[in-house]
Image 1 (cartoon, rainbow over the protein chains, first blue to last red):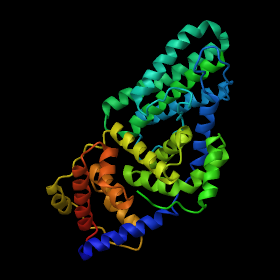
Image 2 (image 1 turned 45 degrees about the vertical axis):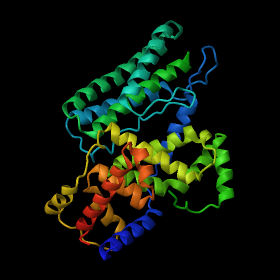
Image 3 (image 1 turned 135 degrees about the horizontal axis):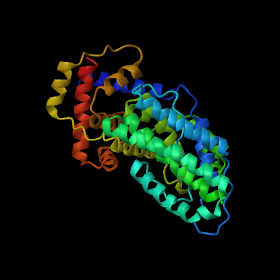
Image 4 (image 1 turned 30 degrees about the vertical axis):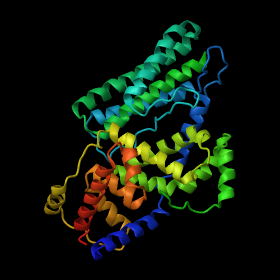
Amino acid sequence: MTDSEQHLDKIVQNARALDEGKTPASDLWPAIRGRIERSKVVAMPELAGHAAPRPARSRRTLAWIGAGVAAAVAFFVLGRASSHGITGAPDVQVVASPTVTSVADSGGAYEEQARILFDRLSLERSLLRPEALKQIDRDLQVVDAAIAELDAAVARDPNNPVLRRLLVSSYREKVDILKRVGNAE
Amino acid sequence: MTRPSPSHDDSEIDDVVRRAQRGDVDAFEILYRTHLPRVYALCRRMSGDEREAHELVQDVFVRAWERLASFRGESALSTWLHRLAANTVLEYLRWAKRDDTRFDAGDVDQLSDHSEAIDVRADARMDLDTALARLPHGARIAFILHDIEGYSHQEIAELTGTAPGTARAQAWRARQALLKLLDL
């Protein structure tokens, strides 16, 4: 091994040692905990007829999330996005609960999951209270609009990882809304 | 692939893991705090983007929570979690179509022609990360997993779906490029 290679190894070793104390600038735990808690309360029954826990999120929260997604879309569609410019984007990531069939981390998988849940919702609409149905339709409309806008934006700029990630986040949110509908009947 | 996890002795960690497996979120927070620096470093280096790293760290720990019940303790939790983190980032890079950049022998010379050497300053991590960010993804990941994280070429090949020889070649070329970028 040459002196240069030894020097490189030393740099790697030092960098590795410095990693031990380095954490993200902001505390990520509250967001992680939120996602964990949400996945616990939105667990859908695997078998029809099982009692499911009531959703923890209020309609107001749903509306806020929908508005947040729409705001994020508007932000990007207006061309103000850059890979460093999404500080204000809301955390709309939701993951499937352990009791739900595993959802791969891709737009396609979420789209498929959303389609299945939407089909189920179509069958169950008559069981929902009219005001709840109205609210759900409004939330879905907001998220669908966000998805459509992001789809178009991704088509224009297919290599933009931020846009792609936002699109997945929107699909996740749609899946989350539909799962809560399943629990809310 | 072995690197010791910080603080907490083994029996203490075992107890915390068992509590987390039973659904104790507070216990899981201890695991999160214990393993965050290494997971974060891996996500940051592999993605090459601070913001993406933040999101990936969240994804890793949410996924870890979901799969914790499947952790049987055959390996250290740090090894299990690290593998989960590497897989999560690689999945993301594949999805973002950023894993297909091959780094060939001639690219090392090309890289040095177009890039200024980075001064080696006191902050080794910053220097190394700056240099790593200039490498193509494939080479960067091979180097990070092998030279920094201690994976074998065989393990890298399994994780990335390439041949061991390719992983070895990518790591070697990344090394040559880093020597030039860091002006060593």
